[in-house]
Length: 165
Image 1 (tube, rainbow, N blue to C red):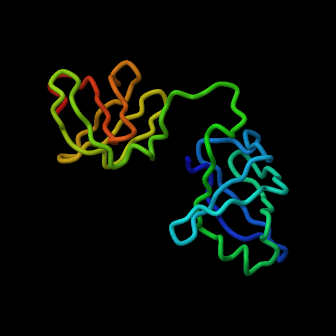
Image 2: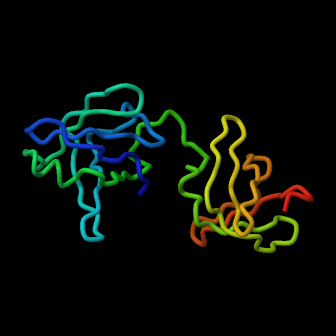
């Protein structure tokens, strides 16, 4: 599952919440499929009964079982997850969300040597870059430089230009 939104706050007394979407648009949501919010480490499914877009990346949402201000307040700040296969996308995206790369190990493509861990990123349009620790080195993340993405071991193998490290 991937994080698609966060519950920003409750809205009104009847249990609606305001969602802030991350990496997906509200119109990509398949309302026939559940979204998940973790409680005590377990994913709890909720169906979206009503979704009303508010601007570019937000929407008012009514979830099954959430009918009061107290219920909605309990969800405030919670991350909302979905199975990526259930999103109505025109084409499957091959790119990773930069947030998911934080904590990953980075290896050099030429030597397979571990160079550090992703500690953050700069989402510069057309030129995203990763901060690699130790040393807070800024490394470009371009599709031509990515050799391998191993989600199981959370390892990113990159062609790193000489002298950059």
